[in-house]
Image 1 (tube, rainbow, N blue to C red):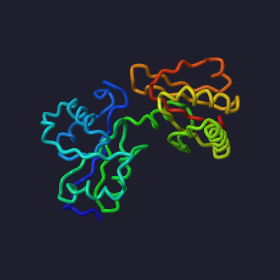
Image 2: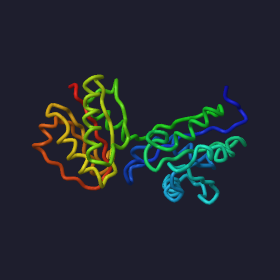
Image 3: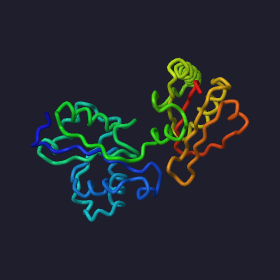
Length: 240
């Protein structure tokens, strides 16, 4: 049972490409931000910049920010939720996309449920889901694996394992990489995966240079990609 004397936790999405807030965020996001004074964010500077860009009319100096990132220990969450226990609403912001999806905001949401605090997710862009939608691969069964191993040999073995899993379970495999390692991952995908396996590359989603294409490995080898340092999501399907 939710306790009425506690505040509500709002999961507030942010754009995943520069200068796209007006096209990817619903009006409900701005309306809710106008009502919130307390925030948990990955980076205070970028969070303040994002809220200022919404032009809510609120003075940024009146808002309260605390850091919640990948280095935040779970035992520190309770102290960060003090405003909620005092009856204040709390907004959780990611650096990009939707809080809680491949994001440390999940720690706060988990704590909220344990404390029977109401959680409200607001709609916004998720590179993972947008890539899946545009891939043509199965959205009935899929798995997101985050970042693959940095070591080349381990990464190749992981790719082969994901390819086998896709074939066995008829399941789309989704993963990503930091922009400066995209090219290395891509080269390993083309060398490790079978010719008939389908791969979707989704780069700069919602951005000015958006590129989304699904082809078999044998076709990709005939169409070399130039890699710049932009965010990308990769999807693999060995069941088409």
